[in-house]
View (cartoon, helix red, strand yellow):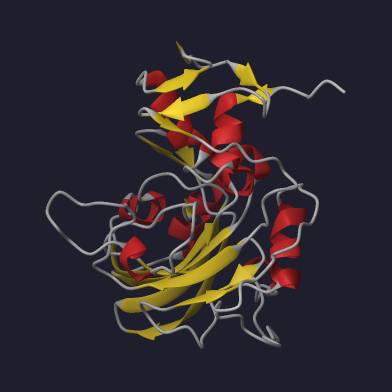
Length: 279
């Protein structure tokens, strides 16, 4: 039976080398070979092909070979979402559990001054789908604003603001309290452009003094996970994320030493778009 060919970057991402976008960059840099020939974007391969990255042979994995795992990490301010920093600053990967023969792939990013929920997976296809703008996955943030905020400003940010990289908007905004010129809001965006939440608020002449991501898709930041700690998602939670990305469920296949939460409940934690607006 002839094997079905797949895009090279998709197979490399599934094999645990990084996200699909990272694999595209590797291919473009000329360090990937297929059957002894330098690979190019657009190449398609089967599992019978011989692939190397930077001279090292890659064990290609099929969908059936690879369990789908996801961990939740509570990122503190001051950490970078990168594997290595030339200046030696802390990165989120410093605190993650080690994977044998695979790599954790960050689902989205947070800037150095933003804290909160980060999801990591060993499944490049899941990461790619959850990050891609076409899937319209919600990201919810708690944001503290320094400055006066009025209804007209909120309406403009809901309708859309033209930033230097295109139109941006919050799909929902809710005021959640505060005193004086420091007020808290929960906001929802549908994509992950660089500093998008901060830039939207700054376009209205106010300052973001704190920013924390509290939800990605249908996964809420677990209050039991303190800053700098991680927890592995349950099979049910991974299945929910897979469904959100349009993927079939797969076994998580927890290892004997994995920290797996049991019976986590999410009662009372609702996305802001489900909160009825006050008239």
